[in-house]
Length: 119
Image: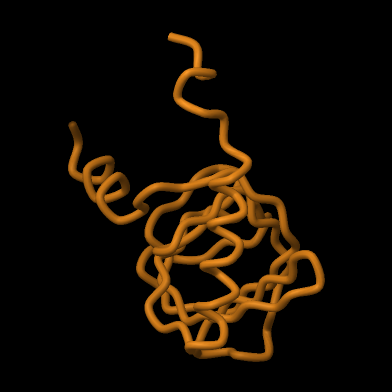
């Protein structure tokens, strides 16, 4: 397995399908937010679809809105894909960690049970 794949697998943890609107900005330009869409979420990070281009390891600010709840975190760009990027959360305030935990638990509840997964 290539190093980048190993790092990606180790840092993203258990991820769940998720759909929410988001904004992302470099920490060095905290008002320069661009729109994005969260497609996967975990307690450690998320996958964003966006046309914006950011550098690997760039510190960013992330805002997510979902079902009337708001989440913010400081994150770093962990990997890049043609359709977006993976983020690793670095700093999450307690009130936002509670929101994230609720979202992840809800996503977990909506996963198919092991007996329902083909294979």
